[in-house]
Image 1: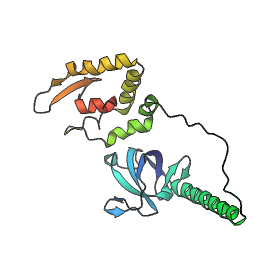
Image 2 (image 1 turned 90 degrees about the vertical axis):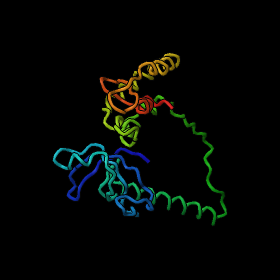
Image 3 (image 1 turned 120 degrees about the vertical axis):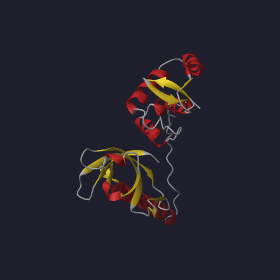
Image 4 (image 1 turned 30 degrees about the vertical axis):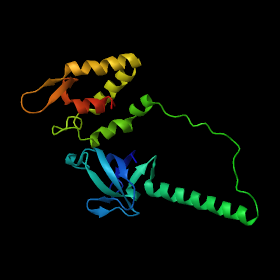
Length: 204
């Protein structure tokens, strides 16, 4: 699970913008199991003077009472979800004891499947590039996220035929750097490996 959230310290001060990744109580972070009161978080943007900049892109364990999503803590969201589940269970048991059938809505809800374009241009999808290891140089990890989003937006604004032509064109742009780094391609004046190029443009 990847959700952008806000992190606070024990004094309620905002310290970083993060993505929480591990929510299974049996998962382990920092050699400790999360349990029911902690969550695994990936620090994306430490706020100045509130957290060391070296902690960027590190995976940490944090109490759910100090991780905010949609203005409320994860602890609050968990309580609301648990309450709704218990209320629904009680309603089902009550109807069963009264000899009534379980309530089934006759309304048909249409679920629109999101397009690939809307998925790959989502900020959460862009932030996930930080967790990818492309090569020893880690080109994709240090590639600016705003530039990656701009390149993707331009790429998916083209027709499918034009996108296919660009995929073929990149093979002619691959070149080698001095030293044993393998072949790279230049994007926004930066050299990135072919694997990083594929991840930036979400091409398998």
